[in-house]
Length: 102
Image 1 (tube, helix red, strand yellow):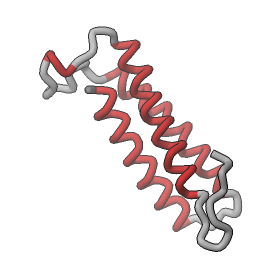
Image 2 (spheres, one colour):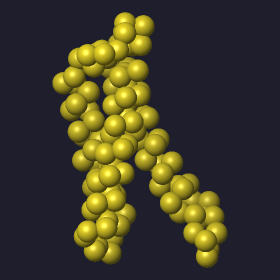
Image 3 (cartoon, helix red, strand yellow):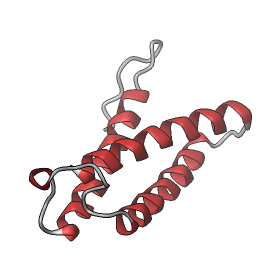
């Protein structure tokens, strides 16, 4: 359950940072900006996961995984799959149509 909370928070943080950065900074290479933000939030997710307690201060014992390494792996998997899902959805263009590169 810790993995779900932290990966959801990291995904939300990525969306907020990407929106702010892409609206305020006029850069031509948006893929590079998203890649930098993805790696920065990914590293922050790992750092926060290692520093926080397994129950996050409010989770019950039934909601925790016994292995913290497995929980970290699951958190990074959820975050990465959420990013790739958002990227694939962003490649749908009304003029070109759906691009099946994902």
